[in-house]
Length: 134
Image 1 (cartoon, rainbow, N blue to C red):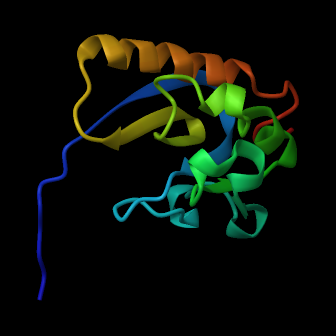
Image 2 (cartoon, rainbow, N blue to C red):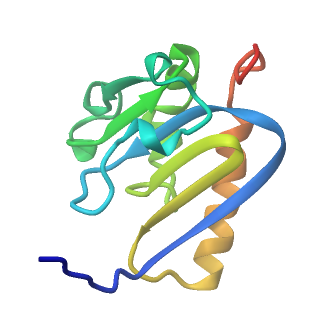
């Protein structure tokens, strides 16, 4: 038996002129689980899955992170980065030239504008030598 449902979500996607290192941050959710299939261009054996709890604290219990570079994990998976108002609790994924952040529910256009700025700042925190081919 198949079922369907409407799932309302809000988020932003930004395109960058250079490839970004693959990383996905997945807060606990019945809708979006951490899966290597989210990174079609990255060989699955390069992706490691981590629990974000030790790095982020109890408010992020159940958050899973898929990443191919430990330096990227260290640069981004920190409370002062993912605790920013519009990033907190959102799913994030950097893959290819795209950075995406989303969550269930609606957000006002002003909040999505703030999310876009925070997502851009998150990409600016990446180590210089990270990314495909580094």
